[in-house]
Image 1 (tube, rainbow, N blue to C red):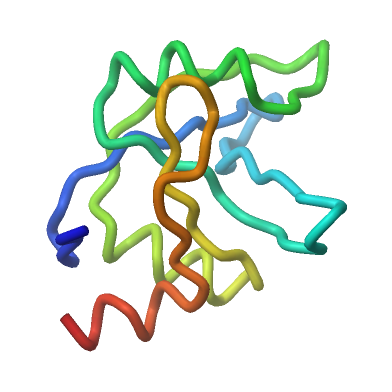
Image 2: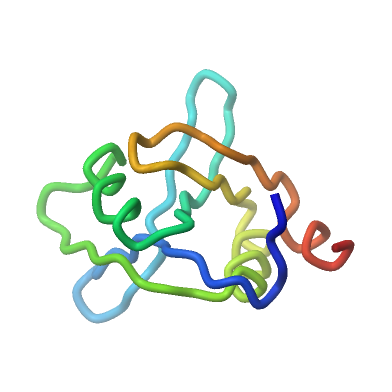
Length: 103
């Protein structure tokens, strides 16, 4: 998969009532914390329904360049998982900041 620093991806943003943050997920079975992203906006809108969310929060899909997201994810201890509309993992970027520097 060819993901560059300037590749636009779709991420789910949670409005926490005054500030926004990326919606993170945790895979209990593999003990992995990740930020799910999608290659297409439509896939993100459909895939949002597959993600664990809090009931009283608002969520929206936003575009972000991979390099910016990767830097944030690495600093916060998250991986980046590219998902399809069904919520299935297409690709795991375990150390995003290193990944985009090496491609």
